[in-house]
Image (cartoon, rainbow, N blue to C red; front, side, top):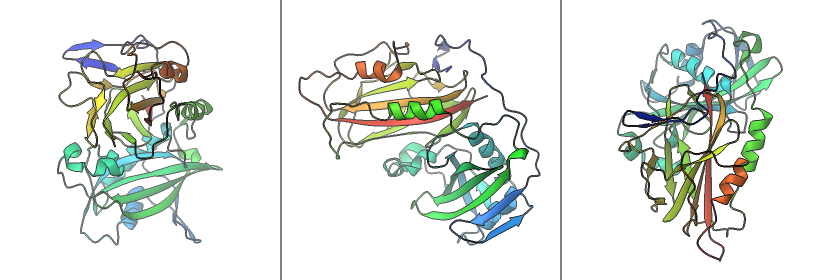
Length: 343
C-alpha cells in the first residue's frame, strides 16, 4: 500500500512505496454491450439488447418525484461484501450511464456510509445538507460465461428500497484480465481478522460501527483519499490498524499527528478529520486492504509505533497491542473495513 500521510506539504511514505503495479486493467468496455434484465424474485426472464441508461430508466419509472438525485454506493461480490477489480470498473460504467438517464441526476459525493444506521442518524453532520435522494449500489457474481449484477436503489432518508433489478453482462465483453471474484487470500484474511478480542467479555450493548466514505466493500483508485466514519455505543479507548495487501499491519490511530486514543459515546468520529494535518492517500501495490478498529472499556497497556510495520502476521501483531491495564477481563468491540485499491 502507498498510504501517504500528508502533513502540511511533507509526505511520510512507508517503505512499500517503490512496489509497482501487480496488474493493470485494460481500456474500458465500448459503449455498446449486451445485458439480460430480470426483476428480482420474478420467474420471467426478458432478453434484450439495450444500454445501461435505458435499463436505469426502467428502475425509476414509478418513482414519485419527477427526478432523483443519486449518489454512488459500492458493488461487492455476491454475499461476501468484498470488492474486486470488477467493482470499480462497473461503478465507472454506471457513472457514465447515470448522466444519460432521463430522471436520475448523479451527485458525485461520498455518502455511501449513510447506509449504516449509526451514521445515517448523523447524516448532516457528516455529509452536509445536500439534497441527495437515494444511493445506488449492489452486488454481482459469476454465472457461467456471464456476470450477474444486482442494482439496488435505496432512499437515504428512510432506508427503504426504491427499486432492485438484475442484469447480466457477457463475460467476453469485459476488459481482458478483469478479476471478478475475491481471491482465496482475501477470504482467508477477512476470516482471520474478523474477531481478535479473544478472552474479552461479551456485551451486546457495547458496539463499534465503522465504514469508509465509499461504504462497505469500497473500491478506490491510485491517488484517491480514504476516510473512515466511526461511532461507538459507549465511551471507550480506541485503536485503528491498517493491514496491507501483503498482510503487514500498522497502527494508524492514535498517531504522531494527534488523536487521544479515545472515542466518546454516540459521537461521530471521522478519521482523518477535516481539521487534521494529514490525509490517507491510497496507492500501489494494488489489491485488497483492511482496516481494523478495536474499542476497549479499559485502557490499552501498550502503544505501538505509528505507521511502522508490526512484526509477524497481522492477527498476531494486532493482538499484541490489545493487552489492557487490568488483570480482569475487559469488554471490547470490533469493526472492520475492507476495500480494493486499483490503478
